[in-house]
Amino acid sequence: MAFVELFVVALMPVLKTLIITAVGLFLALEPVNLLGSTARHHLNNLVFYIFTPALVASSLAETVTSSNIVALWFMPVNILLTFIIGSMLGWILVKITKTPIHLHGLVISCCSAGNLGNLLLIIIPAVCEEKNSPFGDSITCSTNGKAYASLSMAVGAVYIWTYIYNMIRSSGSQHNNTSTHVQKLPPEEMDHQSQLALPLISYQTTHDHHQGQVVKKMKQHIKIWTQRINFKMLFAPSTIATIVGILIGVSSLLRNLMIGNEAPLHVIDSSASMLGEAAIPAMTLIVGANLLKGLKKSEVGVWIVIGIQVIRYIALPLSGICVVKVARHFGLVGSDSLYQFVLLLQYALPSAMTIGTITQLFEVGESECSVIMLWNYALASVALTLWTTYYMWILS
Image 1 (cartoon, rainbow, N blue to C red):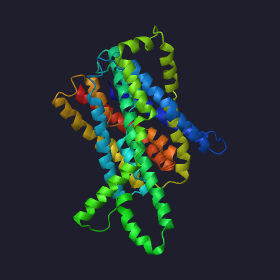
Image 2: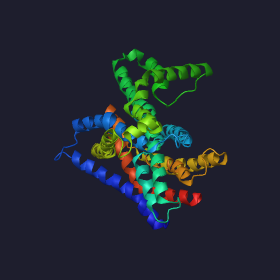
Image 3: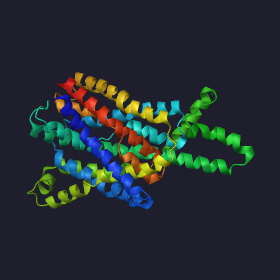
Image 4: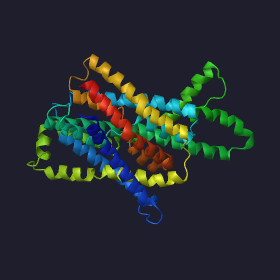
């Protein structure tokens, strides 16, 4: 495939995202005010409880089968590695840039969670339909590609609504609790309580500690995080939808009842698909609406934004090449070049739009998230195209 053609293929989904973001920004302007604070809150709830679960369940039910799910076992592991590597790099970034406490979760989330859903669902079929595609027959490529992208979206949704959700929630709660606590303390207790709170709510260390103190404070830190994690989110709507979608896909009885134009209960799958189609535009509109606040006032520094872009578009893609090469060497991913292409692409995607939804739910870092997303997706038009080209070249 020629570079110019590939550039257009990779550029289109990113441009669509930027255009919808601009529409969201316009709708949030005071003269229009169709996406004000209250409207965004209600739209977020629809995305969380209705649109995203419907998209995940319908996509998985239609594409995942008992025969292909076994061959895809490495994808959840690969996505987990993107989160682990990204989180480690994000943690280093917040230490170096001295990021404000309430933004720790946001910065680490933007470094670790990629857009594993809508971009793949657009890019993979587009690549398959190109006449010079290196992935063989376009029909087979599109069918397999949709299955890979759907599973990627579902697994990513589970990780985001458990790990990322709780991290942003905990980070914001720590900031709020600390502010309230410090205001209520009498002057004579300020220094003592600040020393106890510091290792629990901040990554900054200003004094050397004895080994016993370090171990004790680490235990306190783990205890606080355990208390703050909302384990109910392990069974968030998206998680339940993933389980339901896989069960329908792998069960021949349920698949025959619900999937296909001739299925007796096909209307259920069609209705879920129709609802799911609203998830991606809704999330993107919310990010655009939040951007208005970010343009007026934002606490995110230039070096934080630059650091996130370096991690997402340089460090993570290079890490992904190493991971997939090792997996291929040990026979963990098979010989399907399209499958390997999707695994590699999962490391080079911009940050997940769902992060904006989560910051809106907790009203923490909304404007900062929008600023980060703006630069993230603006650079994606170049970075994602270049990495896509390189990945196809090493797999051909």
